[in-house]
Every structure is written in C-alpha cells, then in structure tokens.
Length: 286
Image 1 (cartoon, rainbow, N blue to C red):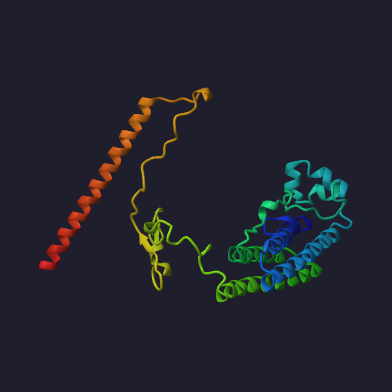
Image 2: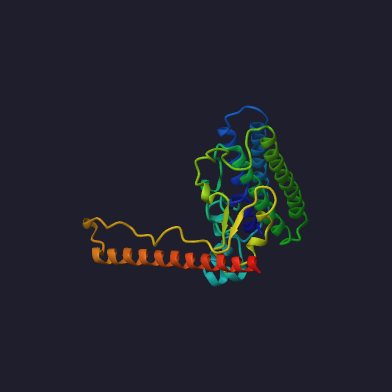
C-alpha cells in the first residue's frame, strides 16, 4: 500500500504536481492581489500534503522485510505474486517515500501547467484536483487501515474544496472582466470564420449531433458528412545527401490521382445537391 500511495505523491496528478503547478502559476502571475494570493496559499498547503503522504509511506514501511522483498521482486513472477514495495523505497530512500509514482517512475516537471493565462490555468487546476480526488477515492477503498483512511478522508475533503475554489475563481475572472469563455479572448476576427462553429462527424457514431452543444445560445453546427479539406499530404522531395527513396514520376502520379479524386468528389456532391433541389421543387409543386 505504501507503493500505491506513491501515486498520490509523484504521479501525474499527485501532490508534487499540484504543488509545483500552483507555485509556478503564482510566481508567473503578473497581478498582485486575490488571484495570486489564492495560488500561493494553495501551493503552500499542497507542500504539507506531500509531507503527510511521505510520512505515511514511511510508517507503512516500518518493519517491512526490506532485504527479502528487494531480493524477491527481482523475479518478475514473484513480484507480480507478492506485489511488494518498490525496492527503491528500501535501496534508495531507506524505507521512505520517493519523488516517484507507484511504478517507480520519477516525478516529471512536464506534468505541470503554468501558462500565464489564469483562466486556462484555473481550468487545468480544477481538472488536476478532480483526477487527484478520483485517485484518492480509489485508494480509499483499497485499505481497511483506520489511520490511513483518516488521512485520506482529510485529503478527500481538501480536494473537494480545491475543486470548488478553482471553479469559483473561473467565474470570478469572468465577472471581473479579465477573461471570457474562450482562451485567449482575442483574434476572433482573425481566425478562419468558416471553421469556428462546426463539429465534424469523423467517427462511425451518429449520436453526437443529439447533444446540447447544437442548441441554445451560440449553437455549434454538426456536420454529419464533412468534406475533406484537401488531398493526401505529401512531404517534399528529400535532400539527395540523405539518400531517401524518391521518384519524380511517382510524385506526379500521386498528384494526378489526388486531383482526379477531388474532382470526382465535387461532381458527386454537385449531383446530390441537384437531385435534392429537384425533389424539393416537386414537393413544393404538389
């Protein structure tokens, strides 16, 4: 179980991740005041959560037969059978916690999000707390130890608070006029106007168009049969010094095929529209 708790310490959504995420978001925040203070307050609390979990890992490993376990799990079959502690907990950490996940993979700074845009960051924070609480809830049901459960009950409560606070902070950013729904709230006139309001059905599923996203204010158009936006992608001719296999005739052949396919698709679409228009006219006449 000490090994399982490592996920809450050094996993992608563990306490080390949210600690560093909130610290860097706070340090990168360009405004003094409530938002920066909230980030720094929460980051400092998360440091305490790392300490709590690290202490619990050490307590759970107390009295563990470190030597025998470390030797036994060298055999993959035996390791799968006993599900023992990570040998590095004994070999590297001296019977304590590691800055790693439950598989012993070291914590990675790439897990954190600190973009400088508070709306984007707060959304990432709410998601991180949701995943963290989910993993804590799963681990809660994997133990019957009352001390461990008491600690996790506390962690569950704080994850609840943190989800609520980031969701409320998102609302506050919008009410303060600092951010709007879309991140960033800019370049709307510059973006491709043809493609900023459509959802494309690109799977075999057919129920996507039944969602509420196609209704209400600012509905999205659901295209059930979207057209390809171009022909097959083709890389340029390789540098001769790299000795890549290449033929100009094959390249030309592919281009001709692509153009022919595109022309056929357009002709089919034109014929379909023409048939539909005639059918509509007949219905109107009747």
